[in-house]
Amino acid sequence: MFNRVRRFVLFAIGASVPIQGVAFDAGGLLATPFKLAVAVLLVMATVQYAARSGGSHRDRKTLWIIGFAVSFFVGTVMALVAGLPPAPVLRSSTTMIALISFYLLLGYAVDSKEDIVRLLWGLAFGGAFTVLPAVVGLQQSQSVVAYGHERFSGLSGQENLLGADMCVVLAASAGLFFIARSKVRRAILIGIVTLATAGIALSLSRSAFLALGFMWGLWLYRSGSRGNLQYAVLAGMLAIVSLAFLPESVMDRLGTIFDATERARDGSIQGRFEVGAWGIRAFMSNPIVGVGTPRFPVWVHEQPDGLSASWHTIHNAYIGIAAEQGLLGLVPFLAILTISWMDYTACWRAVRSRRLINDPVLTELGHLALFLQIALLSGLVGGMFHQQHRSKTMWLMMALSPIVLSLARERLEALRGPDEVEAPLFPTADEPHDPPHAIPASL
Image (tube, rainbow, N blue to C red):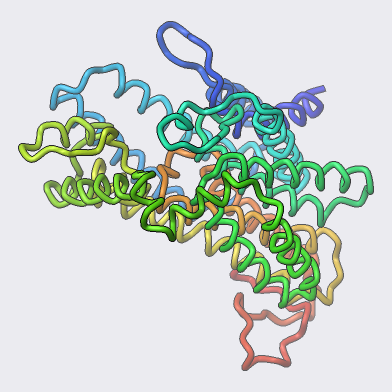
């Protein structure tokens, strides 16, 4: 009975991640589906702990996660001491507490490849549910009045957030497609990929279009190594053909990147540069701990020369963390991202170098590592334009990296023969004669 409930809970948690524009009033606090899912995850992890059935994945990021949490706590105290009202501090704090708890609890609750697949299926269906209102023309954003473009946000609550989350949903669904054995499931995943792509177009998010280009580039590079180049090439050809059928609003929005006249009329790019420059000034004013979380808008208002932009949100995760949490927060966050990337790379390379084993479980883990890393790349690119450090999908991709690596390590150890030699974790071209099935003990 517990296993059935557990499977449903993992699916529901995955589905809750992209639905960020819905909230319930809970005693003055806004309880989002994600925060409710974290509470359920806590209960499930507690039950697993009591039954001693949780995961035992080694995570090199744990201390960095704690360091980032400490920096956020310091920034929060600084904001309160400086006189910031409790309400915005409480909203910011509950979100970050939920994200960090989600990361830590997921590492314990997820203990198998099947758990990851179930979680990603939930994410795929949650993404489809999120984007459906936008596809049918509902949930139109208020920013269409300000910038003259017809943009939609679906159930994500914000257009750029919809674009960023749909990039992750697209990559996760593609990974599930390559490990699905049922034609019905593959057809469903093709439909979800189509919906996610439509959501990116309807969001008119320039950063999402840019992230798509980087995602395809990484897929093309890695697919050439795995012999699946035809899929990446086909996806690129379809993308080029689809340009002829894109709505005029999409082309106009993209034109603001290259056309100076359109860029001046839109004004958002110049505003982001201006706010970003102020973010750097905030960091330089207190480089160790920043100006406090979430105190940057108030700090800007207090400066004598002020800020001409009508909004004071830093559209850059890295500058935003540096401004409000200083190096105390920026260094751990960059370390978390770097190790997450290295985890996926280590898993993918280890599986690829032993592909002649032809083990289906190992092959599926290799596909998951590749497409989860592609999803992580979309967050890294999006972080240059949005506050991705507060993105639920971003934290999901970071949380899954040590789990995928640990499961690959366990599978490789199980396949190791008594007479097999150890191979380096990252095989090079100078070592062409390594046994194709040698298992690295250091994985």
